[in-house]
Length: 221
Image 1 (cartoon, rainbow, N blue to C red):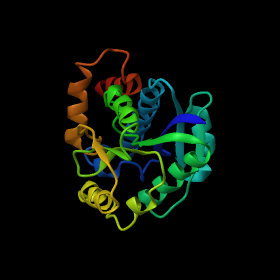
Image 2 (image 1 turned 90 degrees about the vertical axis):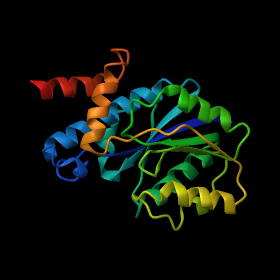
Image 3 (image 1 turned 90 degrees about the horizontal axis):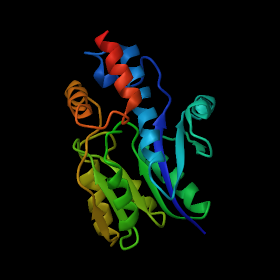
Image 4 (image 1 turned 135 degrees about the vertical axis):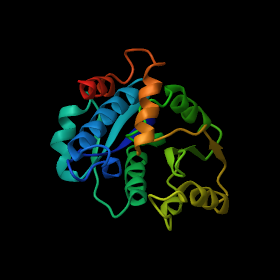
């Protein structure tokens, strides 16, 4: 029996359709480059988690070649096409459980400054809880993990709104699931988030978020 799988919910960076909420102040190409840097640093973050097999949910499925190029060796790549993020989450987490993993966790791809101990804590919490959630400051969640598929958690949720976490918590309560919440964290979705990340980088070890650091330095010219 395999132990733990950690899957990053990722999209192929594309100019004009990636991180459009950041345009303006960013140009579309800058927004796509920023997302790619965040994604690469998220992969490095996930690789720090001892004892967890790394996986990436590939959206759209035809981007598989791009992800083969950027993924670390032995990463499980799961191409997925679905109507919304809930359907994607349900599919890829079920896929990993069917592969024999005892614990499966999904992580977003645009908050790579998340302290790795948050992920380690989430894995440990699953020894004693049915469900673990990492609340995002925008009303969603940056991490979800469980040991059995709970498909109803992903149904009738207003995805990409500030109601996602609240609605998910209500579902979990209705389903009688024991739940552990992690401390909140943030996604990089707005200009203010970019400035926050720049400030945060000043306090982190220089080897952290190397791709995002390089990009920010390029922007400074």
